[in-house]
Length: 284
Length: 280
Image 1 (cartoon, rainbow over the protein chains, first blue to last red):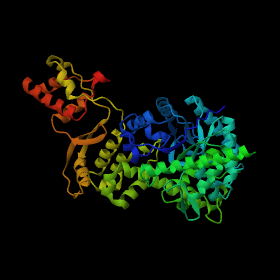
Image 2 (image 1 turned 90 degrees about the horizontal axis):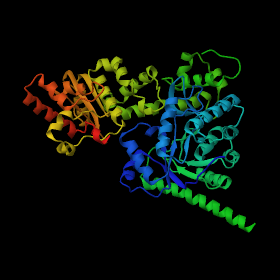
Image 3 (image 1 turned 90 degrees about the vertical axis):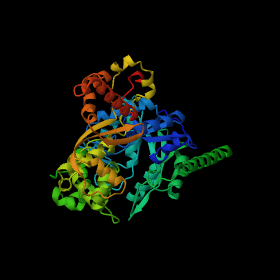
Image 4 (image 1 turned 45 degrees about the horizontal axis):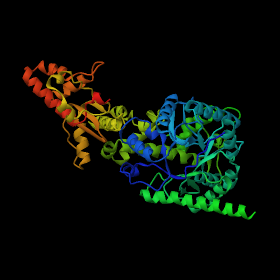
């Protein structure tokens, strides 16, 4: 059984906002997500800021380099560092991506797509299990934005992710912007993806902005959340209920208040949807 | 890259994909070098009317290069400034081919760049470039090493005079000592202050790089500090202030040696270089 605390609305902790957390003037968010790898090293400013944040807010560890889909063995040194950080910070969630980023010990520092095959599914199920055993807790796995699909990929992404979550008994970090971007890039229906996610396994939602490059959308996290993603978020809340939601803003980062306002909009949207559902339920 | 019958397994698919998206001149240019035809790419990856398979892979190829270029620019800003946009671009293109990242964290992507610069045509053509890269990497490297309580003057003031000889002098972990052939610290300073970086004096020097609280600093060491600071790092147990006086006493009368030892101790405490073992 997956334990899913509801944290409210959060933002990603980013370098330009560090001083606001150190001087204690940051507020308006319920929780913060940090990129795990940025805090693996033991000293200096990053750890100091993270400790200051942790004193005031729940924290979620979000990794980008677990490379859970790689054909290489899991990097045990990486897992040791992640386990140590999780032990110190006691995060509400630990998450990473349904992707691979390294092969033959070489890292692309990217979230590269997997083929949705039985072989890949068996492989990732086993590896998520290894990670959960090492950390002593369940993790959330996030769908990524992608720009290619593989010629031999007999499953849909949503069937693959659903099967992974159920077989590995892990949670899902549903990135609504990534669903939007990939749906555009590959021509599938974004609502079908969201509707297919298993009930009770969506532990967290990500929202973000994206950019257009030619005919494709790129997951750039350098804009406010666009209208199309807000519409999809409404649908996600209608489908899965109120879920801890985070706004990611990683490039051309505005001041903290702007990012917080975007995350508060997520709370308002979710409250509106839930209120409508409750009123509709009361009428029945 | 041999073709096999049927769709590639997971490892083979990832090896092909990685080779294509990390190629230095883009996917199309890499195909003949990797012995892969367009038909094979299309058997691997689906394109459509909006963008073909090679174009879609190129999205990843561009992101790979620019992500690493940005990260390395962040760790080596003075090297990038000295080489200019094109020069730095070319250096990093060559570097990523020779030294692909082998650590999950981008923080370590530049670990081998100083050694690479020394052997690269850009480094051979410009004395001091490799030393500048070493200095910048050391600055990046001490940035997040472990925190330790630094010895403060207040603690020294509480120390009885007879206790000074036994005072341990362990150096903080967040430091590096660099032996250089060129005045990389001067090159660094001139770029920092927008001064002309030409005609830099040459000559070997030892540079200390360290983090004091949250600020990363460096300075060239003179004698006897350049000779003695490395000795503090020798041995399984930290050297003591008494031992420092003994080392100085090899060349100076005892009273003068003690005076120099106190001067050095004062400088090191001011810089936050000595761990306060009573607070560890």
